[in-house]
Length: 440
Image (cartoon, rainbow, N blue to C red):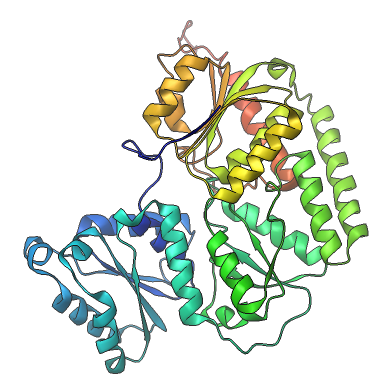
């Protein structure tokens, strides 16, 4: 049973403006100018923290529109703010528009074109009002503008080169660890990452994008349009398009095997698999990891497609649970095709929905009544009155702050997931009542 929910009145994810801000803030040393009221600028601050950027290296500005500008337009304030940015030592200003200015007709493209000769930095407008879609639509909007404005057409191809796309469109709160794992694997196989779109990306890296032989989209939620553009415009072949991201034994083995074939590193891929699987098995055995509580238990997965799609096989094969419900907050068509293929291979037919909202998810959880939910803090509080004993908080939003970037991809990623699950499982037996008086 598959549902597609067209409207979302109670969203898990933010708007297009946030996704665009998330993307451009991944460019090192840039300046982001939000043409918006002050409240919308708070989304830029949130995107800034998601990108793990250094506030001493990246500038964020705002036109701080008030009632008059929202009613009559704020193009003059936008022009003045861009001119005032001349005092900053910056190579580029990305001008992002929000709902209010676009509704009243502010033309940020024309304003930027008129101001460009008067400043010594690039001015790149991105029309990304929140009503244009979800944050993942915003990621795609920004990537489209960046590729068209910043890439160089006549670059010679670099052997064994890769362009990584949309690593930040990932609900793992420590997604930087996933990106680092991918880069390390590619390095061991002799591949060269010429650009990462976007995370700590220098402007100069965009000049090498057209020189890449291959691309990898590191999200099932955004970035596919960018990969299609690179393939059509520059002949950049997309790798691992039709398989889940590398979470769990099977997915990781399949992913590494694909890369090994492409980069003539089959032996290296097989060695990575052998060493990784041995490390996980030995670590679990020595640490007395107990997975029996999940054996044949009905569970639910509520996540973004980036984590949710590969998590399905991990939950089924490694934990030996039976997914009864898979609700994805977001999705691309390629991700839906991958999940449908996974369902057929594993001969399972859970209830599936794409672009779900919190209300729809809670109603379905109430009907299915799984023993555990793999989700976020939203599900933790949503099921308090549903008699569902366990919620494993794996995807954003999660209140537990992580100083270290903990990947979910690959073999160490499996152990990170298992540790979260194991800790949460045993936490349920911790008494909530203080039954004795301490002597200290």
